[in-house]
Image (cartoon, rainbow, N blue to C red; front, top):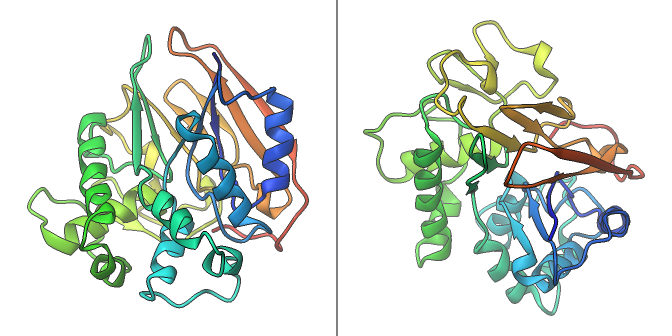
Length: 282
């Protein structure tokens, strides 16, 4: 049985097919972990969702900011962006099944691994959060998305405030901070204040901010955190950090990392993807 983590697909079903062919993937034998942004900006988001839904437990997926955008647009809580490529999902005959499946995906996944635990998120983790706290906070949002209050939550989900975590946060403010950290974070300050305007690489950090994974003393430093979202960062393979968004939808690569739970051995596999959009960072 092989385990793979895969970066942002963003509707590039053709590239995903080529990657899975390269891997020799078998849903009866192997398990895929997708790090979010399954849909949008690419040419065939509906095909990606149908494919992953059809794999059952062999495809375990995180929600990224583009996936949450689809859910909010489908609920009428958000207007489509001019660059969105979501119509095939929104007008599909199986729309309800696709959205129901998507709404039941995770915000964070944790795996026990020899040496260091493995934490998967779409974007980042605030420095105050441990692995266990991150998983618990993710479940709070997952419960909201899967419950009867999801529609009202979509309407209040967007915004940059509060810009930092406090254990005293409640209600929509609490959930918004969790969503922003797990699906939008790139840069934050030493005390965890988030910055969302800068979308370039790590060297472009605004004054007073740094990449979230460079904050001194962050509580997840004793784990390996795998994430996507940051195409201008590209591939990073550190003992404590795995960055797997390599800009497939912008003409880069779709990346998979084969890993195991017994040791830290890993192999990066990539396929090229023709650009579906002009270069971008979101």
